[in-house]
Every structure is written in C-alpha cells, then in structure tokens.
Image (tube, rainbow, N blue to C red; front, side, top):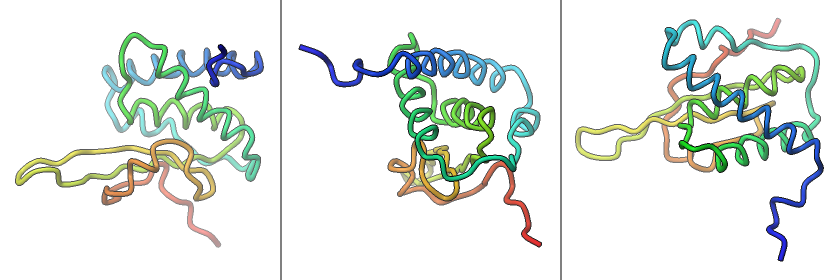
Length: 142
C-alpha cells in the first residue's frame, strides 16, 4: 500500500531537501543572530506573481521536511524557510506575525506566509490571531 504523499516527482523531493536545509538555516540564524538582521533577509522581488504551482510545491516541501526532521521547527522558522525558498524563485512572499490571548495573562504567537494575499503555510492556524507585523513591510504604490 502506497502512502499518498510519497508518490511525488523526484523534483519535489529535491525541493524537500532544500526545505530541510532552509529550516536548519532558519533555526540557526534565529537562534544566533539579532531578529532585525534575520528580518532584513526578506525583501520584495519584482519578477514573479501568479504561478501557484511553485508556491504549492514549496508549501508541500516545507511540510514534508518538517515531518522528517528530528525536531519540530516552530512556525516562525517554517515561515522564514518558506519565504527564502519563494524569494529564490522570484516571488514576493510576506511573512505575517500575530498574537492571540490564550489565558488570563498568557499570549501565543504565530507566523504564516502569503504570496499575493493568498495563504502558503500556516494561515489556517492564524485565523484566531491578531496581526502584529508584516515582513517585509508592504511597498507603497505610486
């Protein structure tokens, strides 16, 4: 019996390998470097919009890599890895960060990624979170 996610083209598994590398990089940079520097690695690209195949394949690759790593990357690490992968292919992803109150004095944070306003990863979980920040900051339209 074949498990559904394993019947993917080789190129998708190569992309999942890249996602593993990006998740390790995100984990290390967020642990070792100031957040301002890491956030500065996100930028707007002018090249690509609308090609949902790459966006969907990237989301699948990050999810697959997350399931196969010996630790559970946080949503913020997953969001940076996804954003970096999409940027490398000419997309302009936005990393969104929000909080939700979970107890009388406790808050929970969550990060997710969108491209052209469409969810890539983490959006379903984000519905109960109040948006605090968008990285990179939206470009003014002139």
